[in-house]
Amino acid sequence: WTKIQTIDSLMHKAGYNGAITESLRKRVRLTRYQSTLFTMHFSDYASYVKRIRGQAPAVGSKALR
Image (tube, rainbow, N blue to C red; front, side):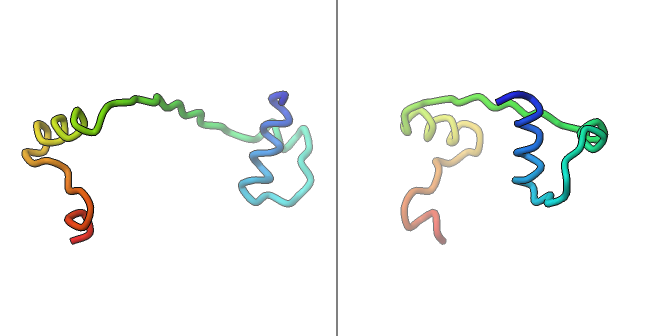
């Protein structure tokens, strides 16, 4: 996609149903976010949570209480 196609698509996704003109595009203010995927084994995650929070994460039915 081009930048214009991306902006137009995101405006429609956000619920805008009007005509998208160049004038409208020039008035759009964007905030770009970036994320990072981090992978670890559950045992490493549990150890991390226990160290940070003082207790291991709740698992299964304990999490619903």
